[in-house]
Image (cartoon, rainbow, N blue to C red; front, side, top):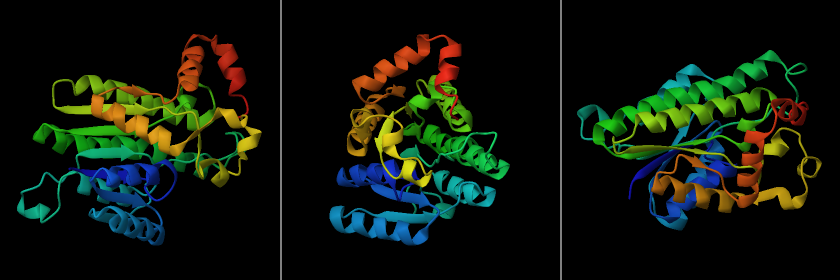
Length: 259
């Protein structure tokens, strides 16, 4: 089995990615801001599945921290400078957050951080990973976007739109290299994501509109294995995505006016 590096790996979808990959026998490199929580998750996965788990605390809004993660991703293996580190075979760019406010009332520091974590870090880490992956002629990138990428919902939607288009472009450039790129575009998922933004789940959509993290990750990993470029878990969000693509833009803007 290979090694997967997951950003935002201590909670939400990232933690579920870690759990399912560990259960399948993959070693892990977990990246998140809080070292204590990372260590808790790492120990849980080691005990439950017997896999190796590296912990790499990093704030992806801080350039030096991003550079450290990129350095880990650049490991090819077998070189003196790599030591005992194994190359990463799967990168999951999952880290992200919603501010819970619209752009006009948000602090500019929050907006800068959102772009740094959900756009700049994704680009830099992907670049580091595909360098060694194409050299070895194997590997996969899974960038977590959202159905929100098709809306006009402020900086979050704009960032996810960038990730979606970036990943589609990357997939084309990687064709024939032995490396694949998949963008995961889920809808609303039961995680800590909305609570951290101060957004109640019931205030957004009814209970039937929510997905379970386990199902979302299971579909995503199956699509990564098959080399699918755009992964949209569940029929309901496939339909929603199709509708958003054909709706008049004035209608899409109206739906996203709350952000």
